[in-house]
Length: 395
Length: 181
Image (cartoon, rainbow over all chains, first blue to last red; front, side, top):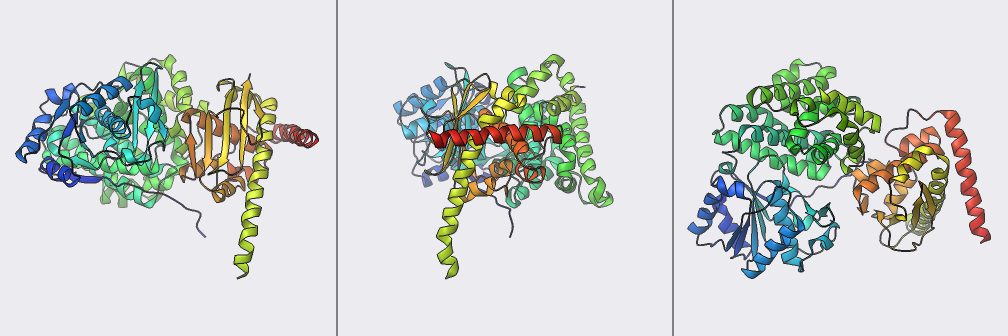
């Protein structure tokens, strides 16, 4: 009898491709929503990314009732309460989050308040607290990496207590994720690179960590293939619409994969580095990925070897002896990082970031050891192990 | 037909086994925090008065331990003096049995969604490390390797034997004291 067991869940309707934004009015109407509110940030608005969303709705006679465009990079309980107040005042009936991780997480949290009631979002913190479906909620990602549009998690900072509050519930998942290449067309090169490497790391960790399963594997390998095939061509030609769509889809697919199979040591180290040194998440992922794979190598040799096919294609895969494929996969990722460094100076080591000092490594290691992601790393990690990986990633 | 008759007995035996294992583990957690410096160090990061619960949903067997300070854990049995700070909850008695009979590693059980964490995840990670360390001490290596992700390479036989004897003695003493009380 098999001892294997897994769970897989993703009820998000993915609406992807050319003119995807123009599907928003129809989809909202299908959920009986007529008064949507947009939650976004100033950068998105300044980049003109709201214009096609608003135009798409107005052309179908759907009025965007109100727009909140002041979501900060680290959203807080106060911001969530304020937005919920505007939502109620304007008698909205649905939310469209347009932006990156922060705007999406804020949209999720606002949806909790306006659906469940009250002004204190903190009381809904934790896993499984929310017991009912929430208001119609759509997500339009403007970066291609976080996968937040298909994850059942939101993180909001409680300013008064100085802690980050996690919210976990399948009801946080949006009704639809709208993946339109127009939304990522103007992403600057270094953000394109870092966020795509975030998606790559989601996929690689989903495929090699403990909760991997056949369904998440399928999404993960497809995501790895799309990032490998399209990232460098998008870096060379940022207006490549097809390439942009491939990366955006890869991000969503990697999001589906990792939200069903979790991630491991790369994320544990990345979360700690982000908290201590304030490095962007995608950059941390790109930076640590090969070093962690080397650390895990003997535990993940087989799945990592399998990733050579989506990473390098059938010719390289078949020409590489099976026993060498895992190392070849790591080399392929290193090669990709070198190419990104050449094109936009995306750092490959902690030293190259210029924002981390060597004496911070111990603190990062200690914090990483208590990160939830470490639980799903295929190999046990001690404090000394974490220190050793950080030392290798240093320079 | 026979299987149908046996099933309630199997369920009851499984439930009794889980209950007994929780009682042993709770006492052993208290003991290992008195015996092992690494566990003491791990525990010290928890706030004094921190209450940890491991239980089977919805209202099955449970163990509750408290960090009383200075890295020491105290076993409270199956009732908490106040609301717990961290609860690791098995979704079903069958899942608890899989883990406590060492058919499924704790980390695998987490990966397989057999358990829920209610509370601070970083404390849950720390408590899992403490449980792993305990299992490495008190179980024969062959069984411990089935229970933990990786058997500690620095845990050698003499240290293991001495610590295990001390832990089991403390567990037995605690059992006797409980019966007498």
